[in-house]
Length: 586
Image (cartoon, rainbow, N blue to C red; front, side, top):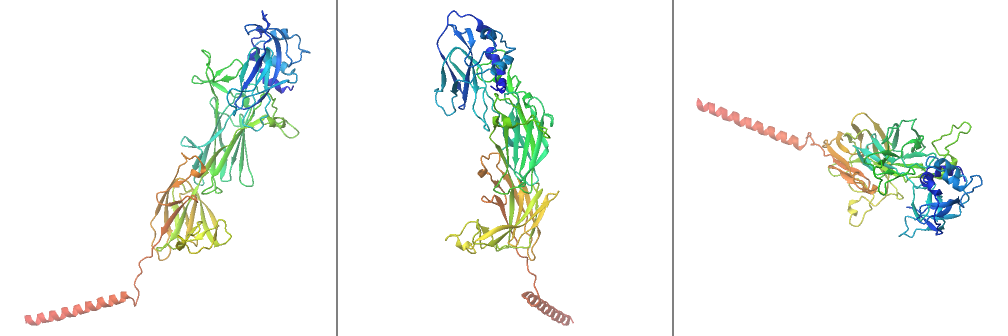
C-alpha cells in the first residue's frame, strides 16, 4: 500500500486501539459466532475491509484474547501480534497506524454503503466476519464531484453499523445591499456590486494537506476590483499573500477568471469553542452534532469563512432581458486516503504547495456553481407630434442618481424580408415584433418586415448626474444602463415650430428581494410604460405646434383695417356732435 494511506489511519486508529490493554485480557470462553459490518452513507460508496487483528471473543463480548495478525496484514517483520497490540496506547497509536498501513495485504472483502435513493434498512452488509479489529477504507472515485471520501478504523466484536465520517464543504455567493443578501440585483453602469461568498472550514482530520481554492467567473459586463478582496473566519482575519493569494485574468471575450488560493489551509481550525455550539469532539479527534454530548463536554461550532470583493458594472453590460452573471465554485481535497503533494518545483517552475499537482488532480472535489445576476435596463424615448407621428430634431437630458455612465443608443429599421426577429411598422411610426392580424391590420402601415440595428452608440462618461442625447430619424432615443432610481427627462432641444414638452419623471424599481428566477425579474414605473418583452421603459413625449402669428393680407389685416375704420367713424361722429352742442350754446 502507498504511504498515502498512512495519513488516513493515523488519527482513526487512536480511538479504535487506545484501549488495547483489554485485548490482552484472558477470556473464559471463546465465541465462534461471525459478525457483520454495515455502512450507512448518504451516497452509495464502496469500501475495502482489512482484518488487522483476530482472536477469541469473550462471552460478554468485551474482551479479545489469543490475538493473532488478521488476514489483512502481514506479520513478517512486526513480531508477535499479542505483544504488538499490547504496546499500542492512545499516544503512540498514530505512529503505529502508519506502520500497519504500510503492511496491508490486498483486500479480500468489500461492502457498499447505503445510497440516498435506497429505501428502508436493506443496506448491503458484509457478513461472516470473525471477531477482531477491521480497517474499513472508502475507495469511491469522487474526482470532480461534490462529495468526499470517508476514513475509518473500528473493531468488530459484534454486528457494527458505521456512519460515514466526511465533511463536504459548500459555497454560497450573494450580492450584498444594505447588509441584505440577494441572488440578483439591478444596477446602473458605473455602479459597484458588492459580493459575499460564505463557506466553512471543513473537518480535515486524516488529511496530510488540504487544498481549498475559490474559482470565480465574471461576464464581460463586470470589471473585477482585485484590491477589494477581504477574507475572515470566525476566528481571525486572513492576510493577503500570507494566508491567501488572488490571481485574475481576462480573455479576448472580456470574461474574467478569478482564483483565490488559500495557503496552508489545513492550519485553519475546523471547529472553534463556542458555548452556543452544537458540536462536541469525539475520542478519534473528529466532531459530531448527533447523539447526546457527554456531560461537561466542550461545545464547538463550525469555523465559517467570509469572502468579500467588488466588481463594477461596465459599458459592455448586457441590457434588458439578459443578466450579467457571476458564478463561483469551490475546489477542495476530498480523499483523506491520499497523500497530497501540490505542484512540485521543476526547473524554472517554482511550484506551489497550495495547489494540486498532477498526482492530486484525481482526488479533488468541486461544489456546484453559485450564481448571481445583475440586471440593467433602459428608458426608450419615442418622440411624436400631436398626431402621434414620429418627430425628429428633439434633444433630451436625463437626470438622476443612477446616471453615471449611460449608453446613448439610436436604432434604425430597414426593410428586410429575411429579418429574424422581424419588426413591423405601425402607422404611428413605431415598430413591433408582433405581426398584424385581421383585427389589427388597420394599425399597421404595411406587412413588410424590418430589421433593427443599432446604428450608433456613444458612451457618455461624466461626473455629473445628467446625460444629453438627440432622437434619431425615427424619433427614438435610448438611455441605456440604468438601475433602480428616479429619473427626470427634460426636452432641452425643441423642434422648430413646436412648444417644449413638459418634463417626464420615471421611477425604476425592481423586485430582486423576492425574485426566484430570471424570468420573474421586472421593473415598475410611475410615468412610463414597461415593455415586458424587451425589459425597457417606453416613454412617449409629445410636442404640439405653437400659435402662428398673423401676416400681411391675412384675416388679421382685415380685422386691423376694420377696427381702424370703426375708430375713424367714431371720431367723426364725436366731432360733429361737439360742433352742434357749441352752436346751440351760442
